[in-house]
Image (cartoon, rainbow, N blue to C red):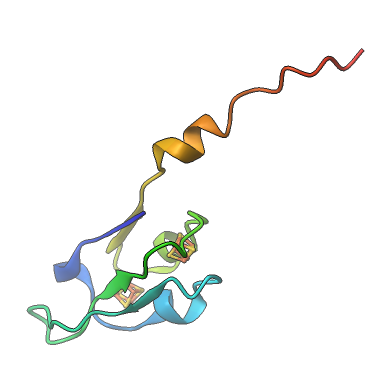
Amino acid sequence: MIEVNEEYCKGCNLCILFCPRDALEESETLNKKGVHPPVEIEDRCNGCRLCELICPDFAIVVEEEDKKLTERQPSTKCCV
Ligand code: SF4
Ligand code: SF4
């Protein structure tokens, strides 16, 4: 899940263009800068964080979901 600080966004669309899952689109509303900040399209984001890294204005934070955290439980398989 992503959090967008809409007022930081300058509308460059880098996050939308480079998202590998096409999980972002322009919102229908304008922010104070007169641009359309990105919004997340449901059930597409895989949490890769590329949008967070690529945004030149630090307008995006990717939050990990509880579900993904539980998937990172250590393996119980024996390696001997
Ligand atoms: S990369 Fe950042 S500034 Fe550019 S459109 Fe996305 S959120 Fe806005
Ligand atoms: S975290 Fe990755 S998949 Fe999710 S919106 Fe950002 S770039 Fe797209």
